[in-house]
Image (cartoon, rainbow, N blue to C red; front, side, top):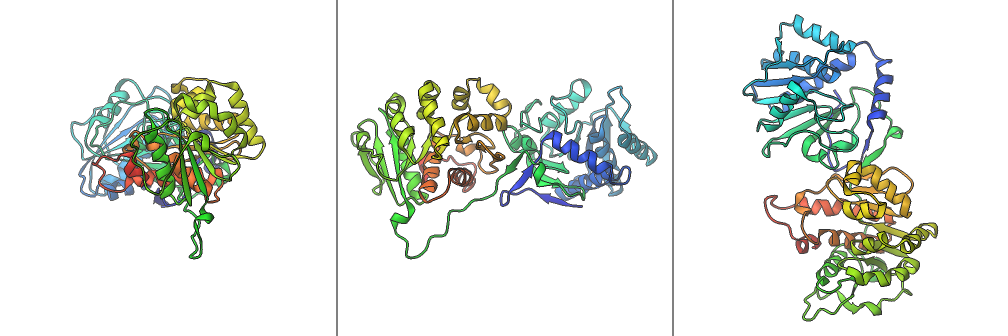
Length: 480
């Protein structure tokens, strides 16, 4: 077996459904008949025994295709291990694939009963209903089985892809999941991007991979699950000038906190100096002593500071954008700066020119802001997050961070990255301002826009994973 748990401590290539199908076809022509299904079934069974060693009653829900065939053969392994196995299978009226037909005969010869009756209770369920190519949830009795799988508090092991999940996009078509259910997914041959973005992270749970003894080429990948990207080593004789300046422009009336959060995050991520230029006066404003508070009109375009613009910028940020887009050497655009550009073709043209002039730019939109820039609905953006992020990067000639579960980092050329860190604790006001400041700090310290975006998004998510997970995480805590 080549079974391994997918961790966030390393980068992993991700493959589309089409690429995986092609690799699978090539592999089948090079190995003995049925051997890939045998390897997959053994891996499923061994993982099931490792995850739930005390489970006695195991329900294996099998569909009509090769995903179901994997489940059928896994049932044999589990029965031999002394487990009480309840196997269900639903046909679709078509002749089963050759491997599945062979698996079905093998299971029947072994004396395993196969029914269409959903059991009343089970200690562990194995979801082998629909495989890689399924784009929607099943209907009829198979749909009832999926509903039962999802509604139970018992743990679930999904074979290759959770039934109901689009393997390319992470869109979930299935029923609501039981909130206490522990889920695992054994991804066979390749890792699929949909397991790690949008609903995929919840539906897949802990992801495992078995390449089934085959060599999977990274050249065929459609994206990468990114690993950590630490800041450069700091030498003992360094001074603050080595770590660059960050200037934050934002904080319109009633929104000064957003600019301060970005500035605080830039400080704590290592920028040598941080200046916060507020778009409106804020009387009695408390801020970290190390932040330099200045009015917006004091912002100079003559220095080499990395500019972070838009955090709490309101309508006032629009007037400053022509100068920022034209002259800033390194620029991070967030929130209201993005909304202003979406409404003004002239500003969009200036943004596009930055890429042509080799000026470093990072955009940090959430799905609604990305939709405005792309001229589409939020649902369209979320329907295919990787494609949307890449489209926005090409449109703006910038590095783009499409925020959300499994944030996507994209650029005009090269494969996008999917971030594996973070959780729902980031769903708090101001967390995006913190991320913008963190990206700015890394750019100020010499990282490229791409390096800074990837590293900051990863570190931002890591902060949400630290500490008690049932406690509230506020943006000011995240900034530190």
